[in-house]
Structures are given as C-alpha cells and as structure tokens.
Amino acid sequence: MSAEPTVRRVACPGSFDPVTNGHLDIIGRAAGLYDEVVVAVLINQSKSSLFTVEERMAMLTEVTADYGNVRVDSFHGLLVDYCRANEIPAIVKGMRPVGDFDYELQMAQMNRGLAGIETLFMPTNPEYSFLASSLVKEIATYGGDVSSLLPVSVHKRLLSRLDELHRPDGQLR
Ligand code: PNS
Image (cartoon, rainbow, N blue to C red; front, side):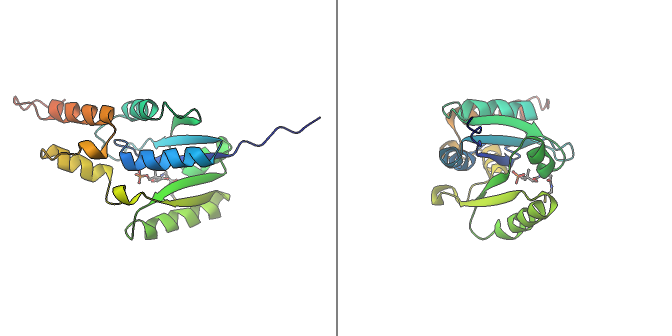
C-alpha cells in the first residue's frame, strides 16, 4: 500500500485592498513552485478598507482563475493559527527593496517561533518594486493613472468605487 503523497501547500497572506499586479506576480510564481497556494485575506475589523473582505476575495478569485492550484480564503486572528488549522507549513511573501525587510523579518521569526511556520521571501519583480495598494489608492483618488499596476477588472472596480465615494452630491456610501 503506497502512502498518500504530501501536498506541498503554502499561504500568500495579505490585506489585498485591492490586489495589485505585484501581488499577482508573487501568487503566480508561488503557484509554479507549490502544489497548492492559499491566498489568505486578513479580516481586520480595526483597519478601514476600501473594499470589503468579500469584494477583495471576489477580485482575487477572478484574477487567479487561470491557476488551477490557487484558492482564496479569509482568516482572522493569528496567521499561524490559520496555517496550522489548514495544514499549511509555510508562508510566501514578496520582499520589496529595503523598506519591507525589518518588519517582514520580525514577523517571519515570530511566526516560526510561535508555531514553526516557515516564511519564504520572494524578491518582487523590479517592475513592481515600488508598488503598494495604499499608494495605488492614493494616486487613483487624485486622478493619477494606475491602469498598468492593476489587473484590468480590479482597475475598473477601483475607479467605480472611487466614483461612488466622490459623487458630486457629496453623498458617501
Ligand atoms: O498586506 P498586509 O497588510 O501587509 O499583510 C499583513 C499580514 C496580513 C500578512 C499580517 O498583518 C498578518 O499576518 N496578520 C495576521 C495577524 C498576525 O498573525 N499577527 C502576528 C504577526 S507576527
């Protein structure tokens, strides 16, 4: 009787408010290395976001649809607890030059110390090394062109959400 093959599973966690081409690049590269990639969207009640968790998950599901081994989920609480409950031994994170290093290393060491969950850092594609969801939202809010930084469907949703928020009658959603 042969033993069940072990599924090499990894988590790509984040806020994804919204998913950018930088995130998608890391998810796609992780999908090429692992059997299954779980994109884990943090439910954070204390952080205000432009999109609901459901909307963020819907966008992620849409833009990762071509990968047969990527699944989108959400979690609250500690990432390591989510990983343990879902038999995910490792986390893949994109690493942008300089700025990310300290905090990412701190979290990686904490997550390994807490639960033995490993973190693998993937250098971001230089094309997206300056990219962050927060910057994209700020630039788009003031009318800057962010179309090259987001998947087409996400760009459309972002523009329509900003449009809803800045109606001429001043009515916020
Ligand atoms: O996209 P973000 O906001 O940079 O993602 C940060 C995220 C979600 C990966 C991080 O905040 C996280 O893991 N949060 C879950 C809570 C947790 O486990 N905190 C302890 C980290 S050592």
